[in-house]
Image 1 (cartoon, rainbow, N blue to C red):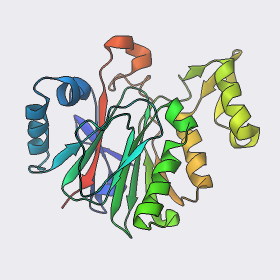
Image 2 (image 1 turned 90 degrees about the vertical axis):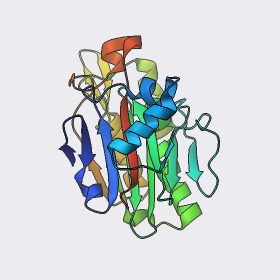
Image 3 (image 1 turned 90 degrees about the horizontal axis):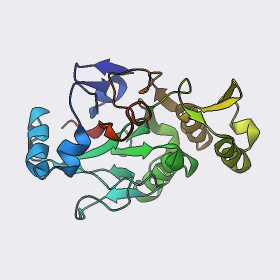
Image 4 (image 1 turned 45 degrees about the vertical axis):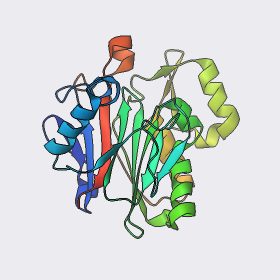
Length: 247
């Protein structure tokens, strides 16, 4: 799935179809400060776009709040960042969608039939609220996409090996989704629960009708190549996820 380019990775299956994908690591830097918070962010964004041969494009991003809010980037672009927004879909070829991560899961979408792309930031709250399914709904309602032909890639986030959660967390999911759907999503070890955010989203998207889903097995907590909030705390940087049409 992911192909290593040194300071970032790309999703081969999307790249081969003409859709650019990027997931940055510590070697690239800290995208939250550079592209989102810095007083020089506009200049930094231009440098980023130039580096990847995307001059003239508009970088689209939101104030991520662990919601299920997905914005459709149509003819009009709102003032950036989009407020309380954790996902985007678009058919525009002049934009680059940007979301940021430090253990949460990036979800990439592409409809070849309707030429629509999407990207969602899915931490456990967004997953519980089914942000990935919400993105699919907007793709079908706004662009007429057929869910069965939409390609989805579940990116790099914290794995079940390290994602320890409490009893209340498990009960919250069990009461909403039931034990059958959660089989393989939660693991009990040493009287503690561990959560697989990737597997949970995989099951939700399969249930929603998606036929082709790629996923990665790396863990941001285990692999110090990536920023991880659980490992580094408040000083943690952010990995950046990006999606765009290559031409």
